[in-house]
Image (cartoon, rainbow, N blue to C red; front, side, top):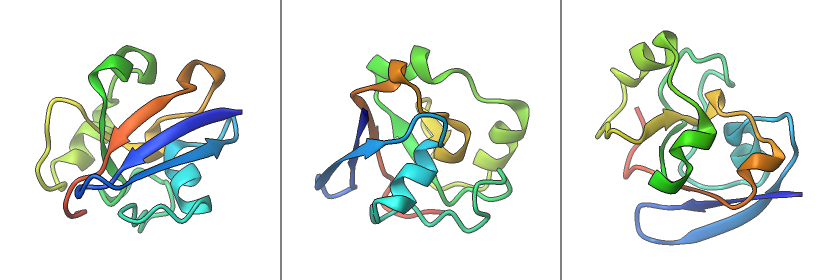
Length: 106
């Protein structure tokens, strides 16, 4: 199984097992990781699943789509590594992925 580590803004870590084919957002929700609101349910219609992808993983998570980029305009504290976790599909290639959560969503 693919493992993903979510790091809350205060440094608290949650390492969870993810199912391939789901998204990083769905993985967070299924494992009750605090800090991922996912108000739109993964439709890329809000910015409440905003994460910062660890630089070591940016190539493996792919690039932002234009729609994702537009939604990130509504996110707080956007950085170069910002992504919407609903747009990152889990696969074996992401085993060990580390993402940080912003202090607030939206």
